[in-house]
Image (cartoon, rainbow over all chains, first blue to last red; front, side, top):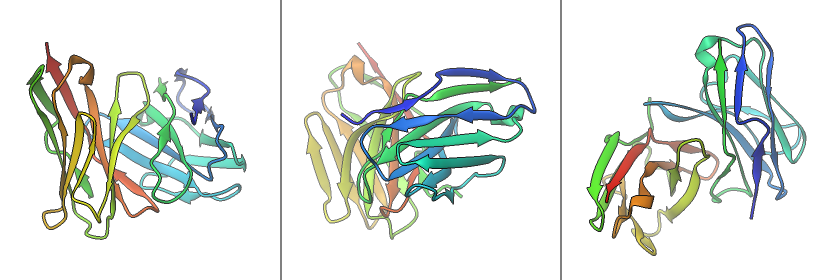
Length: 112
Length: 110
């Protein structure tokens, strides 16, 4: 079974801190994604990556950046955390087009 | 603007009865559709999919129906079980990118 592992289940950070959310997948998937889930808004795409070093903006990239130095790892970076970035963050990977996503368990980030 | 809509935020159904979850999309170019199930504090898990060349796909108690002319898909769960209580997300896309709905919280009452 494909496994997508997010390093932290719960995080509490202070406003202005730089925050790193890590995601690792173990099935050699090319495509990786970062979503945030908020009540009433569903899953919104922040950034995605089709290959190492590649990244593309999703629907809500402002305030975020990403890094994909290795195929299995996709990191989401909050350059200066703000309270409106308090959310559930979900990482996903997939083998290619027309394949479904495999999601990690999520990281609940609270910015205070 | 939301490209995929789930207009019912919540749904309650008696155990053993049918659950019908609905999803509408706006982009006629979408040709692949997915349903995910999410329990609290867990990531979404894939449930069932359908491509635009079909209008129905079944997997056990779960059936997805696609009406391309209406840009509408639905998920039927028969019979509903208490363990089906979760948030259900539909997703639609072209393969390059999928767009998710806002989710419907299903409660199956024993």
